Length: 414
Image (tube, rainbow, N blue to C red; front, side, top):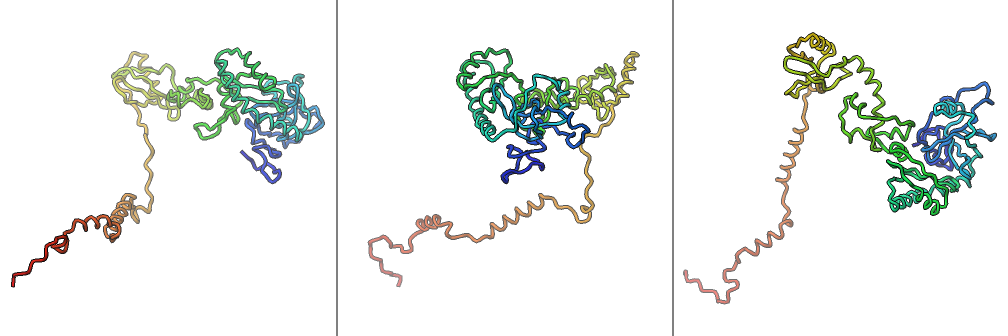
């Protein structure tokens, strides 16, 4: 992903690989637009001194206090306090917008546990970070092999090594509680780092890995969705979706988060539909409710011993319910007519003037012309050399006495 606001460095575009300063931050996942960046403030000294730093291309974000005299802007690489060392991250937010983000996440500005920003990242810091980041792939493969040897019911999802190489965080997925004390000892001995195990869910793993959803766009969890709400099949039923697990599940194996996006709209629209209208009593039997169409305000019913669905208006359903409450059974449901299928497109005006030629007619004429050309094409005598040779061998000899040792007999016809 790139953007038009990226600068250039050494003749190469900035952004995706942090080749330079990116003022938009569009190359990070879970990017937040700073809509307060161009607004002037009366007292600059009272500005927020806390900066949001993103690590590992935006997969993890933390707040750090700016105890230096420098002013950090979005896209700057900075060195921050780590576990018995330092770490390198990119500034994702700075200024007054950070206060709103901290309020949203329930973090106080005067929290003493906030770590500090040390300095702008030097070339040596960046080089050390790239060297240790190159070890993450090998560490993940090796940790999965060790987990398999110890027969632990867990899956290693990602490994994040600190920029100075003194600490490694292992993100894992497990359904039940796992005793990984022996695993920590082996990992700390083999990689010579301080090991931290952090459990995540299937949705968090999909957010870290990323991918393309069935809608054709990037996954919501890896681009903008930060909190994961529970999703159940009731949301699909309210939206008249078929309960098909393969279609309703995302790449994480759970129900798609987008099932909750329009759920409130459906719930508001369903409030005008009558309650306790699952069954209706008519002369032909008990009609069962199949689905509700909030766009056309129609309720679909099916009669016993029949698969045909009958659309009824809300007014008709309310009327039948009142009749049933009075122990009166109507003769018919009186369904309404609902247009099905796409409307027939009007033909263009030029068709009536010049006529219309179908493609099948053109294909038939072209096939007939090709067949005629093949029949009229002269044959190449060289293509039948073998056949001519065989026929020449089978041809009788011109001289009847050929191959006969007897002398020719005189002609006595005279």
